[in-house]
Image (cartoon, rainbow, N blue to C red):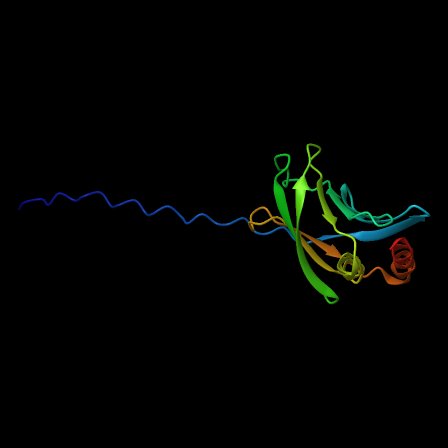
Length: 156
C-alpha cells in the first residue's frame, strides 16, 4: 500500500477588516448670550462646543472645538453638513493650529436662514469619510433661541 502524502490544509483567508462602527451622535445643548455688538449661541456637550457669533454685517462665524479624532492639519478644509426639518446645507471649515474648525458664512438672508435652521434642530455631520465623521445632534432651541434670534435680526 502506498501512503499518499497529504498536503497541509490551506490556511483560511484572513477575516475581512471590519469598518469601525460609527460613533453615536453627540447630543448638544444650547445656551445664548446677547450684547449690543454681537449675539452668541453655543451648543455644547462636555468639551465639544459649536459657537455661533453674529456681529453687525460681518460674516457669521461658526467655530467648532473639542472634537477628538478630527484634528486636521492647519488650513485643511473640513466639510460640515447640516440636515434638519428647517433646512439642509453644506459648507467647508478651515482647521486652525488650535485644532478648532472655523467656518464663515457671508452676510445676507442665506446666512440668517442657516442659523435659523440650526436653531430648529437637526444633525450636523463633520468630516468626509465615514471613519472620521462625527455627528452632532442639535435640539430645537425653543423660546430662548427665538429670543436670541431677535438679536440676530437686530444685527442684520
